[in-house]
Image 1 (cartoon, helix red, strand yellow):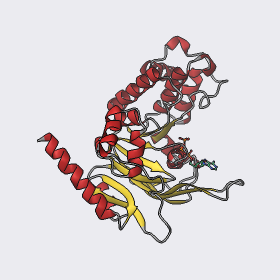
Image 2 (cartoon, protein in one colour):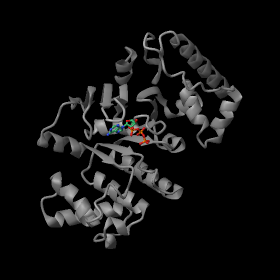
Image 3 (cartoon, protein in one colour):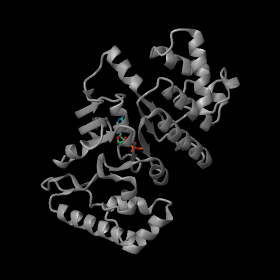
Image 4 (cartoon, helix red, strand yellow):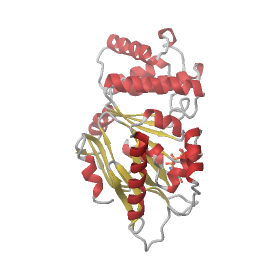
Length: 331
Ligand SMILES: Nc1ncnc2c1ncn2[C@@H]1O[C@H](COP(=O)(O)OP(=O)(O)OP(=O)(O)O)[C@@H](O)[C@H]1O
């Protein structure tokens, strides 16, 4: 990680700082998989940080290591000023999980089909000591069902009796009922129809505003990530290749991989942009031979790029040119 990263993090209040995170899986088929390979970033309080990238790029593993569903191979994770990398004890974990919750990709698989909705949400309230009496649990369960838009009369139904969108709402209710400060939403829209996706995104935005939460929003759908995110990190092969404010990343993508990813998204203005700039993506460009030193560098305020030392001046120049063009257009 370059020197520039911690300085940028100092401007606003950091809620989560990830430093040189590595996650290696050792599987029998392949010798080892570097699912997360030296990833560093900071998430500020109250923002939505989007993580995008193609399948297998390491987005979910990043999310799962942060919430401690996977062990970290190397690196540090600082959450609300505390180093949580090595916490394991039951009480410590409960306290942590109360503050950080996850919404999962598959709304059906993430809910136990043999437990009715009322108990799914109620159990979360009990485990985290939010309510002490059955009366209070019931009251809060119904309140949560109202918030996520599930009819109270469905409280005794089982997950199998709901649609995908409704199950995702139940998953959101389960995550939110413990009043977390931080939510990791891992591809929580991908199993849903487009119209339902929009409803769930609007619900998440509304809840973030009402409850002052912070989101790590993991997704394939670039249009949706742009809509919800303040800043976005683009992942490929376990690395974040570019990280910038959402508008800047979309209007002024600099890394060839980001450009290729954006041109594949359904955003027509980006397709036009790619055409205009006549950029052809070289898929090998983000890989460097071992002898070349590559790192995350800050090329502009809050705009980071993974590149070699040699390429850094080129990216800085490109950034300045883009910024100049933007100013010209705006003036
Ligand atoms: N438990 C595991 N054991 C071995 N390899 C794993 C495991 N979990 C993930 N991987 C591998 O780690 C890499 C990153 O996977 P990950 O699921 O984090 O990617 P992703 O970007 O979230 O993809 P998707 O969008 O398809 O979920 C992949 O090569 C994957 O096969």
